[in-house]
Structure formats: C-alpha cells, structure tokens
Length: 327
Image 1 (cartoon, rainbow, N blue to C red):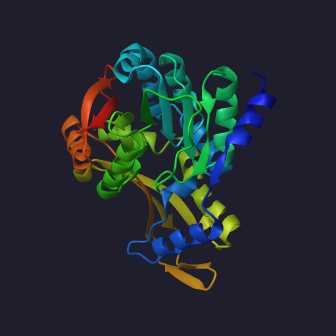
Image 2: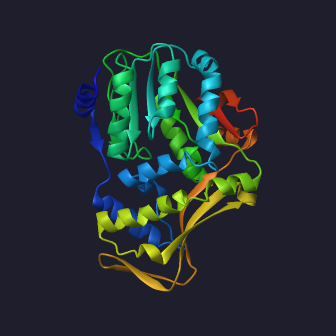
C-alpha cells in the first residue's frame, strides 16, 4: 500500500477528540493557581514537542527507548505467546510508532490497531507508515487525551481479545492516584479477557537516571520550554521563554525524576484576565517520571484490580515490560 492510500484510509477512520483551546487554558489556569505552580505534561506534545521528544530518544544519555526497543526485539516471541493470537491492539499515546512496529510484526495475526494520541501530527504520521507496512491490520486512529474515557472504534473483524499497549514508561508521568485511575481505565478498555503490556523504568543509580533527563545537547530543555511556546500560541499566554530554565532532579525518597521550569527573575505571566506572579528562583512543576521496583509496581497494579502475569527485563535490569490481566 502506498503512502497516499494509507494516509487517506487513516484520515477516513480518524476519530478526532483533541482538547480545544478552552480546555487547555482551563488546565493551565488551574495549574498556575496551585501551590506549587504546575503545568500539565500532556500538553508537551504538539508537532514540535513530538519532534523534540523523538530527538530526546536518540540522545546518548537517554537509555529508555534504546533499551526498551532491544528488550522487545529479544523477547517478542515470548510476549506474543503470552498475549495470544488475533488481538485488537489499543495503544495509549502512539508517538512515532517504532515500538508498535515491533509489536504488530511480532504478534500472530493482529486484527486492528487503535492508537489514542493527543498530537494529531504524530498520530497521522504513525498510522500512515504503519498502514503501509501492515495492510492486513485495520487502522482505527483516535486523536484524544487518553487520560480521559474514550469510546473505541469497532473493528470490522472480531478480535480474540484486546491488548492495551503502553510502552515507554509513560505510566511514570502520573502520580500514584492518577496512575491507578489510568490503569482502571485500561482494565475497562481491555475487558475481562484482555491484557495490557506496560513499560516501566526500574529504580537504579540516580546518576544514570538524572543524566537521561539532562542531556548535554540541551534537547530535553528545549522540549520542556516548548510547552510555554505552545501555550503562548494556543491560549494567548505571555510566557517569556528566556525567563525560565529547565531543571530535572531525582528525588530518591520518592523514586522519581521531578522536572521543573525555574523562573529566572521576578515576573508576571498572564492568561486572559488571569495574572500569575513568579518570584526569582520559583519553580513550576511540569512532569514527574516515576521509577519502579517489582514490589512497588505490583502493588500499584493491584490497587487498580490488575495482576502481573508475565515480566521481562533487559539484562542489566534497567527497564522492564509487564503483562497485566484483571485480578
């Protein structure tokens, strides 16, 4: 199938539920009204944010994507056996689709693929490419915020079960309560007979972890600051980009990276009629990246009514994949 046909099919099947500017503005105002101030990390991924994130995954310090891809390649036969044949793959946050390509290629006769992705550009680029490569797999893209309930499109061919795919340790970007709600949503999506394949970054030497979020080339810093550029463009805020700098530190006692934007000076930011004062050195929290042990992840899954049935780690126990099923 050529690219034009694949894109036309994907466009025809697209369910577009993107957040609108009023939704984004309400989230930003709520976050900036909190103490400490926050901004939601889900808005990192406009077209430029998605491009920058793909560049992050290729930085030498950022082990996560490289290790996860190698783990999937090494363990795909075992994963496919555990998942079973004829599944409908539902991916929460599709990104570039490199891991999805490995998954669809390794599974036995998958019937459909539904990526739920907030960035329309990343979504369409991914399903166009995958649609060319996997012409027997029905592409049913949904442009939406996967943290909110989404009605899935129905595949033309019945599936044996639903597989929720959530790679990349994205689950770690949520607080425990948020992660439990998301896992419960996955449980509803997969149904009683389904399963979920989830990537988790494992607790390790803090120096390795911190380096991954503070690459020397400054790509992660550009990615973080692009959030302000997007808000200025889409909701009319007036962040001065050079008035903030990126900082990411590993909070050992909480086993997580905490990413912040630090105000370089005293300043005021406006969104419509709302004004928010920043002191010099004041931090605005924009993302967490939780790291897990087997015990902490199993306990989290159990609180969502799920159990770990299979697990795969890379040889150095830096990163893991876990298969979950309803408890």
